[in-house]
Image (cartoon, rainbow, N blue to C red):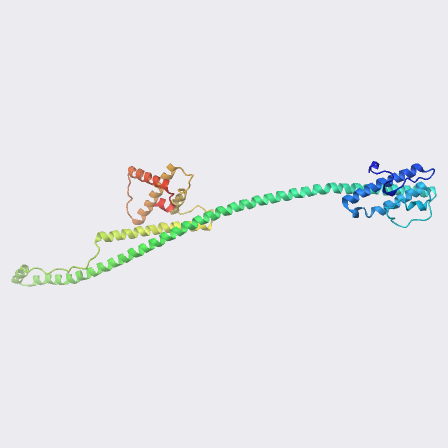
Length: 367
């Protein structure tokens, strides 16, 4: 506490000094002014509640010091402290003995020391409060920043997965439409095949009926005499069979069977693609397919990537087309068609020009 903050007459302590004790009285009044200034500063900073318990004790100690320094002057004690109420009952009998003065001075020093310690403690708490608040705010800011970054990362991941799921759903819808179309064509071809088989069966029935009379006629000339044989040879032979109804030829039946096998092959490949996309839909990130027929499907996904160079894209198209032809040849039991290098080059050039105009889908690239 700096004694220069307040004048000796602060807080109503007047410069009344008795004869022979001017130095001690001035010191007491100066101390009273300094304590009053400190208590006012504490009250203005922390509120009146912070100094409510200190004011009565300080007043009591200053009264004892004033009595010891000035002497018995009961009429001069009350006007000296107009702004500070007394903390307790005041002893009306003055303490005039030297031992009592020493005890009161020691009590005042102890009280003053305790007040100084409390003042330092309050100041340390006042300085430590903003630092703790700043540290707490810093920690809260770090936690909120980390959580915001995690939420943004999760949001990006969810957005990517939703885009992949939408693409897979579009592929699934397209494959379902193609599958329904192929099933319809397959049903039509099967109906045509059944009708052709029925017509063939109806045409074979008259042939079987005509073969029996012809065989009987062949056996009768062998039993007849020579004259009958001559007459029979002169007569024209009857027709073996009547003209049957209109039916498919053998080439047409082979073509129908070939189309049927091709449709079955397409249905098989589409089922493989559908199973692959269903597995991809179950797990957005996907795993590697273990079946050998899934390799053209995985390669077909790479064809839509804009980062793949044009030359590598053309090579991958040719490889996918060859693999599809191999699968189709194995399913149909036919030999693979050998293509010339000029045909491959011409087809790749045509597809390259088509790819510049519009982006091709995975199914179009495979076919």
